[in-house]
Amino acid sequence: MKVCILGDGLVSLSLANVLINNNILVDIFSKQKIKKKNKNRTLGISESNVEFFNENILSIEKLLWNIDKIEIFSENFKEEKILNFENNKNRLFSMIQNNNLNECLLKQLKKSNLIRFKNKIPNYENIKDKYKLIFDCDLNNSITKKYFFKKFNKKYFSYAYVTVIDHKRIKNNIATQIFTKNGPIAFLPISEKQTSIVYSFKGNQNIKLNDLINKYNSKYNITKINNSDCFELQSSDMRSYYYKNILAFGDLIHKIHPLAGQGFNMSIRDIKQLMEIIKEKLNLGLDLDNSICQEFEKKTKHKNYLFSNGIDLIYEFFNFENKINSKVISKSIKYIGKNKVINKFFIKSANEGIIV
Image (cartoon, rainbow, N blue to C red; front, side):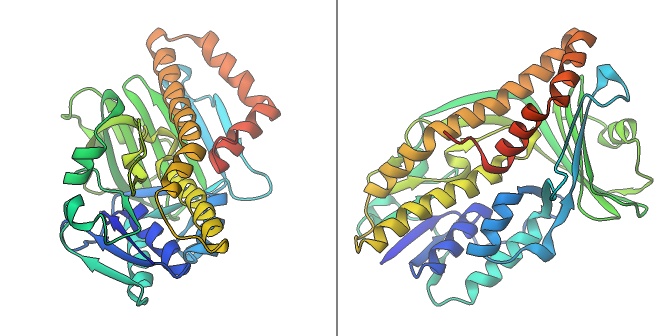
């Protein structure tokens, strides 16, 4: 029983590990030899997804930096918090560096005789009968361009700037997000002496990032601002998740604004759902076929669409709040944030996704 994965990103490697752990043969196709990921890129992983990783993929506890609280500010409201999220019982979520996760996933795969790596992504006609299922996690190949081009797209006319700052040692377990007039900037701790920065800046690419980091930094004694990366921001939702035995996956089916750090978490929840469907088939002694693609779309598409639009709504709300400079709105947000029921709902949604 053999499947293949197109693409070599973190979602592809995570999916491959889950599949081989269930004794499914996997071929991974990538455009070139798999390289290390950029050291500036980081991920936030929800507690429920950490548990899934540890139990079904590999233990990542040693790679994680725990976040106990998120404090949210608005530039209009100066230094006063407008929202505060924390979990008194456990960590709220964890940060992990992309390159460290990538290295561990690859190392785990290379131990298995159920995996093969191939350096060229083929045309569909060349592989359609060789594999029971084809998982397309690649945004730019001939199969994607031919079968998965119909999307609901939105451009934010913004760019995400990501970097890591080095600073003097502090107890560093509180994440901070500030909604500025030009977009949200997040300070995401990754160790006692390092913090990841993600600034979604509305406008052109020519900004003085170091000056802006220093402007909004209120607690770090910065010793170095490392080189930054920049990419254009847009969101998208795939109209159809599959074509015959090809299942679109990862960022290909949903791409969201990074303000809540939920993109990778959505994909891990998709892997959970996919594996439930596959395991049910295997337990019944059934073969893998395109009915899995149909069932996956049926069970995930509406949830992903609602979640993606929820993130977009949050972005637009704070964008509107900054435009009109309304303290009435900010005070209303603070009141909502103090409501324990609403607070728990947001934490649960970020941790587990939308349950419907």
